[in-house]
Image (cartoon, rainbow, N blue to C red; front, side, top):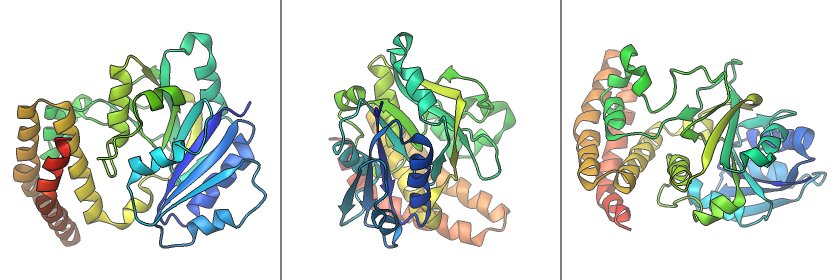
Length: 314
């Protein structure tokens, strides 16, 4: 039964987008109700590589944004093109295998798993290793430790936001599975009003997971299904901008989910301490380009801070 709508957000992903859709055709056509490709003003021909083909076994909806609206907003657009019971948010730098969709779908359809709202699966990287794709809900302490590099200390690895201390070899309930492969019940997604579009990119999926858990839903990582995920995607192209958006989303998350005092403490750490720590680490490695990217990213953050604070009050 075709029970899953796929939503892929594309931004100049080259041939990766075509390869992702081809993998769906090859391995998951039996369960895919539709595919929505939301293009955020790509500057390459990645969308055309898919659109020029007419042999797809599922309908493909193309949403062409004249400007980059961000990941969360584009996902919300894509969800509105379908009506299947489940929605899978899938990165263009992924490729699915034979059981990538069938296994988590069967898991969620079991009566005893009616309380499971979201599932993720094992993601395999370019070297064949299982990525550490799950995360804990971050606290002010976790964000602060990461900001100044304390999370690099081996005895603090259990205190990291990303679950790098766990080999991801077993199925278990978790706080969060990353948005590269994020299967959610449509009724849950719609009841929570989808992604918070204030997060342009980064942490919008974490914010959604937290709201899922607050609403009483379970999030389960399944170790008995796999998909390929290159990781980093097209954001590899723009390191300073990537840094800016990750910091921006961190502050928005803090103001949304921490106390007011905690959120302002996070601002202090992010703006006051982290640039010094990042610059010192880059200098120690002799990375002048890293230093330039760090300074550019924090310059963008400083200029955008009034708008971030304004957005956090909505």
